[in-house]
Length: 289
Length: 314
Image (cartoon, rainbow over all chains, first blue to last red; front, side, top):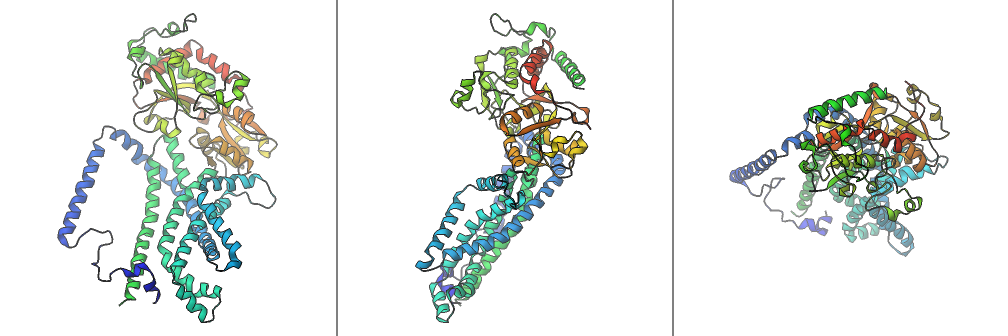
C-alpha cells in the first residue's frame, strides 16, 4: 500500500528485536528471572509496609471487608447493567455523529466555510463544557420546561448528553485520522472521476478509520467510566449503587467491587487495542519489504 | 411509641453512664446562669483538662456545609440574615457559629458540659464521607443528622441519640400522590431520596415501591427531579421536610410522616473517630442534658413546630 510510506509509523525499523508486549526490557531467561525477582521484592515490600501500618486493621475493615464485599455485589451488578446499556447505545451514536462532525470539518473550499465554523464551534464547546453541567441541564433543565412531546426520561437524556460530549472528542480522533491520509490519495481518487464526497467515502475515510481504531477504543473506555456521571440526575447505576451500599454501612469496600467490574470490562479492551496496534504496525512494515 | 423508645434509650444512657463511673450524675452538671460557665461535676476522666482534643484548649466540632436549617440557622436578625456577607466563612445557609438551630444548640450544650465555653468552640466543614472514613479526624466530634445504625458504629463511634425522628414524604402540591394515606397507596409512585440517608433505606425496606427509587446527591437535586416530573415524591426526615417545603420548593407540600421502620425509632448520633477517648464523655453529657431537661428545651425551641404532620399508616 502506498499509504504506508506517508506516515511516521511506517519508519519503524522492521528488524527491531521482538519484545514481549509488557516490555520486560531484555531477552532470555536471565532477564525474566531478574524481572520476576524485582517484581516480588517490590510488591512484597509494599504489601509488608501496608499490612504492618498501625491503621491497617481499620483500613482493612473499611476498604477490604469481605462481608460487605459479598453483600454489596447484587445491587452493584444490577447497577452496572444500566451503565452497559448506556455506553453501548451511546457509543453507536457517538461513532456515527463524531464521523459526521469530522467530515464536516474536513470539507474543503470557501463555500463550506460556515459548515466548518459551526462544526469547529461545536467541538470546542463540548470539549470545554464540564460534562456534569451538560448532564444537569439536559437531565433536569429540559424536562422541567414541560414542553409537550419532549421526553422527560432520564436515561434518554443521559444518552443524549454523553453523545453530545463524547462525539466532540471522537470527531477530533477521526479528523486526525483523515488528515493523516496523504493528499495524494484524495488526488488519485479525484483523478479517477470520483466526487469529493465519493473520494471521502470510498478512499480516505476507510483508511483513516483503520488507523484510529486504537484511540477510538481509548475513548470508548473513557466513555464507559464517564457513564457514572449520570448518577447525578438520580439514575441508579454502578457508582451510585456502590455509594448507597457504602453510606449505609460507612464502608468503602463497595467501591472495590466497582473497580473490579470496570477492570474486568476494560482489560480485555485494552489488550485488544494493543493487539490491533501491533497488527497495524506489522501490516504497514510488511508494505516495505 | 416515640416516648417508649426514648425512655428506653434514656435508660440505656443511664446504664452506660453508671458504667462510665460518675457517682453523682445529673442535677449538679447544670450551668451557673450568673457566670455562664459550665460547672461539670468533674468525673476525672471527663474533666476538661483530661480530655484528649485535637486542638489543645479548644473543642473542634464538625458538620456538613451547607449547614441546613432547622439544624443550623441563619442569624436571628432578619436584615443580617438577608445578607450573605454576615455568614461566617465558609458557611452556607445556616451558620453553626451563631449557635442557632437545633444541632448547633446541642453541640454548644455538649461543649458546655465538657467545660468549653462558646468562644472555645471551633466549627469545621466536614464532607459526608470524610466524617466516617477510617483514620484520624480533624474534628473532636461531628453532628450532621447522622442516623445510628449498628453496622455504621463498627466504623466510627456513634453516641446515644440526641433526636428521635420520623421520616416524611414531600411532594409538589396538587399532584395525585398528595391523596395517599397509607404506605400501600405509595407503592405505585416514583420516589426519590438523598444518597446515604436512612430515608432511602426507608423507601427500600418499608415502602418497597414498584419502581426502584431514584437516588440524588442532595435534596436540591431531588427537588429538581420532582420539578422535572421524573419522580412523584421525596422522602426526608420530618424537620427537613418542613425546611424544604418552606424554603427550597415553590409549591412543596408535606404529604405526611411515616411510622418508624419495624417499630424502631430512628435517632441521630454524634459521630466520633473509632475508639475516640471522647465518646464516653459525650454520652455522659447527653445523658445529663436529657436529665436536666436541656435537650427537651432545645428540641422544643427549634423543632417543636416541625414535628407534626398527618401519619401515613401501614
